[in-house]
Length: 136
Image 1 (cartoon, rainbow, N blue to C red):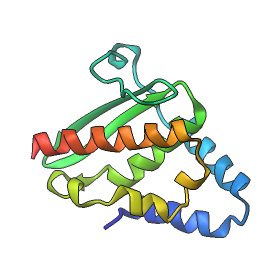
Image 2 (spheres, rainbow, N blue to C red):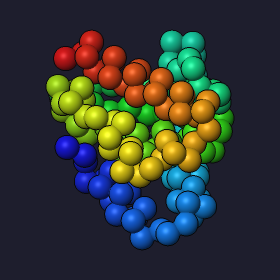
Image 3 (cartoon, one colour):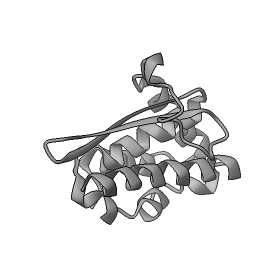
Image 4 (tube, one colour):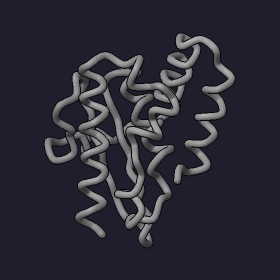
């Protein structure tokens, strides 16, 4: 049930043998992610439970879920980009059906993140799912 954008990341990861190369790809994705305007970096958009500061701004457009995000950490910003590939463009009613743990498991991402980053990733997924559930 993953988006084409996420499937593209999975394919790219399959061609990278070394985790350092995969890590570099995630960081590069974070560098390319458009940051949030400072006005959107407020307590209401901040995700608690993350080692780095993380902000997510979800929205629904014509029944389709999208979010923008930012972080003060490059790796975490890259993780936000990966989550964007997984969730952006999905009908809001389908967000809850995405098994983020299983999908991200295909990248073996959680295996290589610190405990705090893994907790932060879970908090981001929960924020996304919670917003979508409230909008559905």
